[in-house]
Length: 450
Ligand code: TXA
Ligand code: MG
Image (cartoon, rainbow, N blue to C red):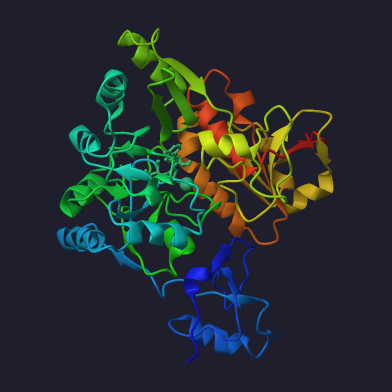
């Protein structure tokens, strides 16, 4: 059979294509006079070649691999963990549960393994990975934290680890450039999930792990989500949804907060809101007497992902060239379901949704704010009937994935939690994810129905 380089393939997120009831990815492959062969592609291609025509030298659209042919699921038993640890040591990829979301892990010191993480996710090499370690002292093997920044590092590590805070700082020289995307700095965290900690300890290496979803899609909060996105890839998935550990698995439901200790500027820069609130970071610095010397700065990071994303208001948009250097990888379209998604707004200037449009709309509510619309919608879920952001964060990503399963849905409308729960400390992180899921688009539901 003729061969081509699958590494050259670029996975493009596209709407679901139901083929025999299973989800497929579409890959664009640069082809120069030969076809793709080998592995699970062969069967798919031979079936497709009867329906599709292609010519050498042009872009070839190829339907990818069906789920379950590539990935294996490992149980959270002694054997399963040992198997997963061995795979990591040997340069393989292992998805594993944390208290935030599932991560796609690789030996952080193995450049080839790190590259596989990028290609498996379809993630641009400009977006650095974070490293997971089992203790603060192991973290100090990854970041170079002597001198002034060390005091801040100690406060954050002692207060928030194990837990959902990623600390970015100057990288130790042995950290691969691929991992840090050439930034010279690296993010590190100690996760609070017992299975994650055991895996990292048994592997005996620092574990690089982005969220285990395809790039730009909704982050995974259970093993099935990982399989749905990456099941075609040769990875292992350590199942954290089993009795005994399930109570720890993704209990925050959104990713860690990412902060950078900038020693030169004496700043703690908040790049990504997440499991740890900005308010609790400020409190920790204050209690330690460091809030005067290190100020907290939140970086605006609403960068449109591509031309197809509707631009946000000019004042929230920052030129990619600037943010590209300071906050790599912060794209506005992120956590997005495969359906046009909007934030509900009362703004009379916003695009308006007519009553009949609701019949094709899936609503994700908060605290029952749109419950009166429920009978008129195609689908309705409340992220938190009791109206707490913690609960809504836990269910958000699973609910976004659920919207993709609703037959006949044209769009998703999500409640504006920032408006509905302004005094909730967790609201800003949750609102960030919802804003990105909606690519900043807003819609007004005009008709008030009794
Ligand atoms: O909760 C989490 O953080 C999960 C679990 C698996 O630990 N991981 C995760 O990784 O969300 P990822 O790669 O999806 O997101 C990490 C974020 C990205 O936005 C990346 O751009 C940023 O952290 N980041 C990583 N290293 C950085 C660096 N050196 N400078 C600035 N931002 C960095
Ligand atoms: Mg991610």
